[in-house]
Amino acid sequence: MAFLNAVLKRGGPERLASVAVSENRMLPADVIGGKSSILDVRAELQDGTLVNIELQLKNEGNMDKRSLFYWSRVYAKGIGEGEDYMLLPKVIAINIVNYSFPKSAHYHTCFHLWEDQEKDLLLSDALEIHYINMVEWRKRKRDVSGGPLHWWLAWLDKKNRPELAKEAVKMDSGIAAAQTRLEELLDDEDFIRLYEMREAARIEWTSGINHARREGEQRGMQKGIQKGRAEGRQEGIQEGEQRGMQKGRQDGMQEGIQKVAARMKAAGESAEKIQAFTGLPPEEIEKL
Image (cartoon, rainbow, N blue to C red; front, top):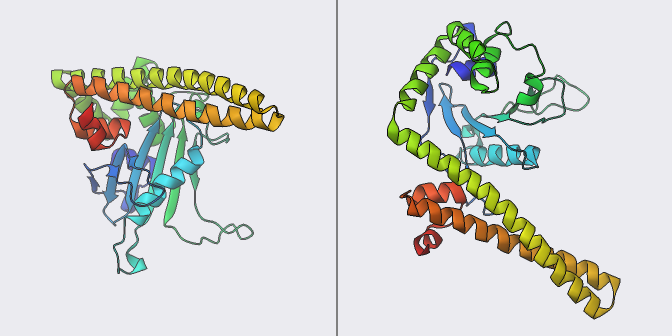
C-alpha cells in the first residue's frame, strides 16, 4: 500500500487506506490468442480500481505490447456476460523494468488515453500504465532526498550502497515494515529453499532456451539451405531457411522448457507451480 501511494502519488485525503492483494495471479488462456499470463502482484484498491505490478529483469522485447496485453486481460475480466459496461473497472499497470524502456529521460513515466490535438481531453481514465525505468533512475543522484518513490527504489535496488537502503528504511514506515518482513523470510529455511530452487530453475530455463535456440537455428539454417539449393532457386533458399529456422527454434525452445519442468518436478514442486513457471499444460507435466 505504501509503495502504491508512492508510485501513484497519493497523499492527504487521496492516500490509499486499504489494498486487497490477490493470491490468484494466473490469468487463464481464454481471452486473447490462447496465451496465459502470470502477474507478479495483483491488487484491488478501495475504490474498486485493479492494479497489476510486473517486474521485468531482462528485456525480452515488445514491452509496450506486453503491457497492453496484460492490461487488456485484467480489464476484460472485470465484467461478466450480460453485465453493464459501467461495471468495467479502472486498471492501473505498473511495470518495473531493469532496462531502458521507454525512451525517456524520466525514470517514471505514465500513459493515459489523451486526444492528439487537445492534450487535456481524456477519453477515459480506465487505462493507466506506469513504467519505472531502473536504468534511468540509476543515472540520478542516489540519495534519500527525492521523495517516497525515490526511497522505495533506493531500498529495492540491490545495486545501491547498503547505507542508502538503511536510510530509506528510516524515511518510510512502509519500507521499514517491508524490511522486517524480508528479514523474517530470510530466516525461513523453506522460503530460502524455494527461492534458490526458483533462481536455479530460472537460470537453467534461460540457459536451456538460449542453447536450444542456437541449436534450432543452426539445424534450421542447414535444412533450409539444403532445400533451397535442391530447388535451385534463390527464392527456395530464402523460404527454406526461414521455414527451417522457425521450426528448429520452436522445437529447441520446447525441449528446453520441458527439461526445466522435469527438474522442477523431480525437486518436488507442485504441478501448479510448474505450470505457472513454464506455461506447460497439466497433462504434459503429468507425463514428465
